[in-house]
Length: 439
Image (cartoon, rainbow, N blue to C red; front, side, top):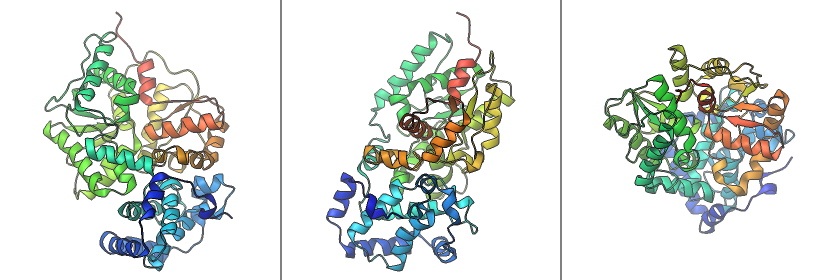
């Protein structure tokens, strides 16, 4: 059995964070947070945890490290939050470094382990609160800290200027009009049925997704719009670093940009964490009893279009595919059946991973772990050998992946384990198969 002390990874943010830290300051922050921001739920989790270890099988880190007990969810909780509670925060700065590395990089907050716990303890919640304490102590991995700071400063995580955002949309509209002459990407259209929501990396690195979404909206005859103003980026690394104040500020801006346009609903593109942020966490932090504007994920949106006969394809995708079930929209929203309906509508042959649906393994990128950057890439790769085995055992080459983080994580795994596979968004496949105008 290893210990976290055996596998400390150097990180500028974590090192700088503990440099000026004292045990007295740690005690102050821990006890303030436990008293002011946690309550009966955390206390009940600690007191009902039987240390039975049944959660262990639920964790891809544990399974990928030959069942090393130090990677089990109960061990992570014991080594972090339970210790902070027992010692009333009286721990050393070096111990906080170790706790931060566990919470930020060895747990994806995927909630798979909760399915294995006989009393339903939510380790992801416990790790989220450990991250919150580390954030308040300013002990955060540098890469994800920079991303969160960018979003806090510019209202998008990629430092995209306001005019660059609009230029990117107009550029995609111009490109698409060569193929779809009547296509528009409507900006700031009041009263539209759909407000299409994206994340910062799309205009920066994956502009083809905006092109494809516009093509699908155009073909399906959707009354839609996108905002020209700040608030358009629905990604949320503040949620994952524990900066809940800015998480709430970003989500409020997103909701208010939709409310300002008086749209009927928000359709979140193929991103899992952004959906979690606006559907599950940010809205709760803001105290919304109900969603100010209804929100659905792209899986549900495409499912609706198929049911209404608004997506017409010329043929089915002929190569066999498998399906990645993203944690935040499958365990978090229960879209496993609709995802399969969509993929079976589009593809001739679907080979399921084992296990699948709500029992599927995480991609190991989610929960902000991929955003902790290069220092922790090997942590992700070695921590998800089971996903590589799961993918390899399907025997197929194409993976339908309706989530940005899953794409990043699985593409890294494909390269690291030399799997020779390829990931596709649902939008990639719809665009490839859809009826297009003859020019």
